[in-house]
Image (cartoon, rainbow, N blue to C red):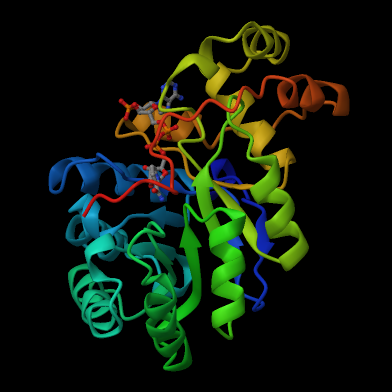
Length: 283
Ligand SMILES: NC(=O)c1ccc[n+]([C@@H]2O[C@H](COP(=O)([O-])OP(=O)(O)OC[C@H]3O[C@@H](n4cnc5c(N)ncnc54)[C@H](OP(=O)(O)O)[C@@H]3O)[C@@H](O)[C@H]2O)c1
């Protein structure tokens, strides 16, 4: 692919000055081995520079292999991975980081996230202190959280020194998370949308989205991803199919009007497809 077809992806500057691409590839449920390597290869060829994995996805090795095989300089790629729920105790968190980094084999991590708060365990501040240590030791360029509601963030901010750079949360037109977004905006925490396409759920079929897709000659997924971008969110759609991986990045040649963004804002139904972070306790 020639450089002229590779889009220039906007970045967001995090609260510590690090820049993160606003669009990335998610690899949840993309199988370790050929599938994840093929997805990451297709993404990097299409111009993606952010890959979002997690220890629990079981595909960090494949992600690392595909990044190396691309021949791209390490510093051009932004790698996110996440601390799994069983490892919130301080020493466990440090060990889990070492294991993720060994699997990715990429020198350092760009963004390390606490995957879920598990408020019933009461250990996320301990985990955060381990994240602060990793950040202080320059083994990770930014630290953040995932699935944190304002009450969890409030507790974290009271007990620790560093404000998270990112909060990665379920966010799509049917679950717009106004309260958490307002809290994050007030504290300088960037919001990253996961399951941005609602895992190919009802949002893709909605008439507001279908009408806009027809108007702009784009697909429903592209309209939804454009809404995330124009809403100032970081967005990490997952696909294991090269055509869709390319489709999901082909969102820079049209712009929704303010009124159209508001029409999508009007779709919110507080409809969650994933677990509620207050009660999710899986390990
Ligand atoms: N922090 C967390 O707790 C958490 C939780 C969930 C997800 N995440 C992250 O967020 C990423 C994205 O979320 P997600 O994987 O849950 O869901 P998603 O990106 O909203 O949707 C993925 C689904 O949509 C399909 N799809 C992708 N592009 C499409 C297109 N253009 N048209 C139609 N269908 C399309 C995919 O199928 P194909 O693969 O067959 O194309 C897949 O079934 C994850 O991969 C992960 O990195 C984080």
